[in-house]
Length: 119
Image (tube, rainbow, N blue to C red; front, top):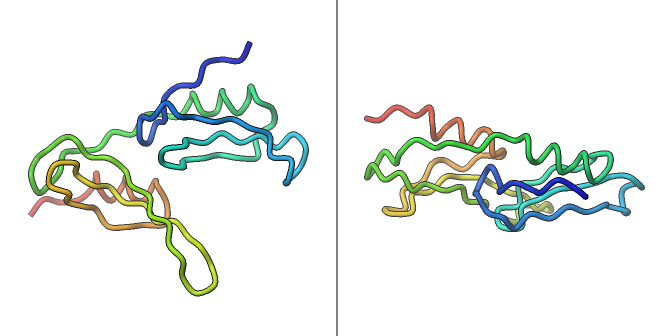
């Protein structure tokens, strides 16, 4: 029996999916959050995909600089631009809807939110 999946380290959702991506190559396993789309592919075997997922550290966000609320969550925006589709990541306060700058990666978004200087 496979190990139980932990909640998403990015958005805390429990809607996690693990599958084998036959389109790429046999043995190419993916794990992804169905709520925020955090994903990792190219993993060898279902057990390895689950183990990788469960080893990810839950993201901690500092409070909102605008209202001080601790209820901040990640947001992913899907957009189309000049012949390609892309994702942008940002952090948004659930109370005042204050937002961090959009970036190309989840890691950069988290870093910018948590390392900002309050003016």
